[in-house]
Image (tube, rainbow, N blue to C red; front, side, top):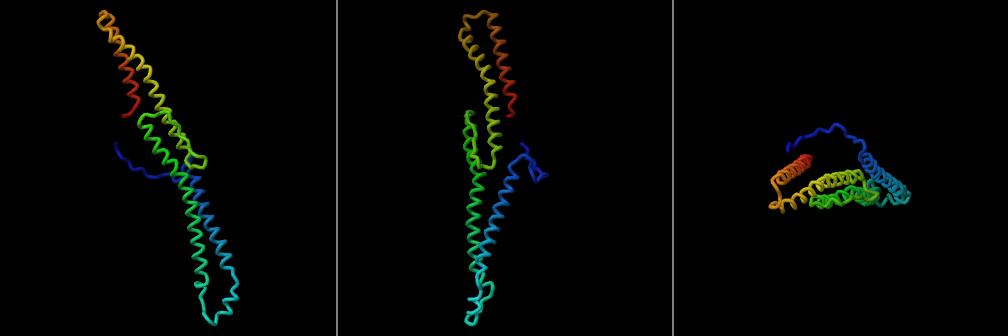
Length: 192
């Protein structure tokens, strides 16, 4: 197969989970900025009169006064964002993990599976697509059932070859040829 490189033309995909992912990402960033700002405001809004009266013992720069609160704010932001990012990525990685296991079962011939994701998972459309693929394969294989039934009937007739006349043998040969053509047509529908 030939590997073609595709140039991206549309950065925003219609009918996809991309807008939701973008909104969730910016929501995480906004919440982190908001929490950081609020915490910094309350920590940085302490009364400086005590520092002013102790100025004769040690003179501190503004950086020395704000550094502990800045470190605390950043630690809170990192922990909060880690929690939010883990939940966010789980809504994408969880379905991919499930699809990996389902694809192994489908590759081994189990076409009775239905893909279901949790309500909070981001990529619901993928479950619908995979279910459509499984259903299509199931229907294609069902088409072989009719030809298989004909083959079983013909194999029973072949078991009694010594009892058949020349005309019956010629008719049996035509039936075998017709069934083999049916199989060829069904197989041609698949691209291998």
